[in-house]
Image 1 (tube, one colour):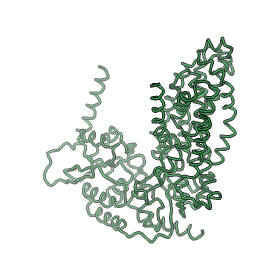
Image 2 (cartoon, rainbow over the protein chains, first blue to last red; image 1 turned 90 degrees about the horizontal axis):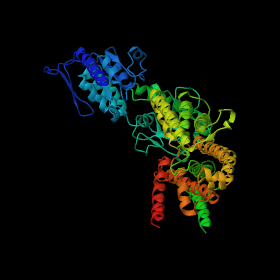
Image 3 (cartoon, chains in turn purple, red; image 1 turned 45 degrees about the vertical axis):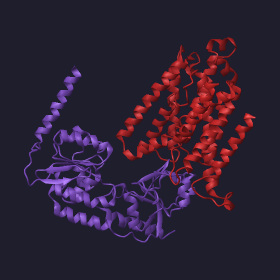
Image 4 (tube, one colour; image 1 turned 120 degrees about the vertical axis):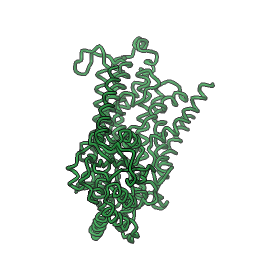
Length: 298
Length: 321
């Protein structure tokens, strides 16, 4: 009985929050904004969103890049770029989000990453009368589309369009002739590498490096050290914010891989390389410079 | 005859593990290839040793707690090892050996806790010499400590950087990616003593199957036996987890398979479980490396995929006859 009373109390509290945020005008006037999101849902706003909670670091970066950063009232704990994002209140995880923490920010739009884990969150937030847009952002080709959708929802179509065009032009570039080969190793035990269905695979191709695991269709896969040794990449790329080689470099079984033995590591900072971001052109440039810099001294 | 068959299957398994792999090694270079010498051979040998150790540990524990469901991980060791590994990753402990050492420490920590819980009637003095291990409390304590450690592990994983620790979970599921001559050497130096302790206890373990009181009347020092066998089995499991993660199922079914084929005497059960456990795990690892190449399967999945049908077949034959 007590527990039940407690629950109704909580529901009442949440209803208050939802009412307070004033997005309840469902009977929408014509002339509102309607977009179809990546989950196939129609998202309709009466006016451009003013209080946005972004639940993926890439979304946060895109919103800042199109000049809508001042509309953010919530971000995930992992949104660390641009530095101004750190001033936005932190609502914790993005997958799955803490619904109460998100609702407490009284957003009029929540940008949610599309994943099975997040599906309940979308319907829960809608029940609180908070608009939710669910978007994919896994590949380089997603960036332009997502930028345009966010641009429409925030009323910043023009800057979003030029941002989207820049992203699309990077995405549609023919891959540079590959001078080097590399393997992205995201974990060492068990060894997990990046396959073709990923942002990083494409990034490497644009920078002039062939991912030796391009034949694996999925974004990442467990492989054996033997396979890595047999594919014999020129470089081993590791997402790492430190300047020192990963600790597996010292392990005897890894030293069968030529690139590991020769210490040919590319240590890529996660902030720039770890997620699809509007700074993709910079990431491509930096990877190319590193390849040529390190490649010059074999 | 059965022994000859077992030995030849063992040799064939090791040979297959050496010959098969995702990389093609030209026949002429086979004996010089670092892929064979530095990767395949240590991996096959380590898989065989860990499989054997898990098999023997399963035999010892099933006899000790007189429960056919006992396996090396039931006593909370995998939970402790997992906690150790996740702490090592969360704290970014440096060095290539940080993870296995932390896992070992976690497993030994869990073992000490469960041992203290299982030791009843003692004064709690040093070494607990006054107490006696109660198999039922040992099981309950193991499950409780394991669940507690798993809860802390999950809490750490859900609070910390997502991808890194998700990968730690993958490590925990077991595999031989980290096999090298160093790890083989660690196992070869470490395992013989606890294995010898268990082998020396073969006769008293037979008596223990009759029940604790009869065993005592027949001259077994039951109290000491249980303590020694428990410690030896736990230390073996801790080392296996530290080197290869939690590979379930081998320690559970290998003893049963061997009992079905060779009978209940521990004098034969212990060596045959070692050989059979090794065969199962080395074969499973070879399949894991080659079946979906260039990708790799977690070895624990393969042990279950080939172990369960084998076990079901033997069980069926045994219950029919």
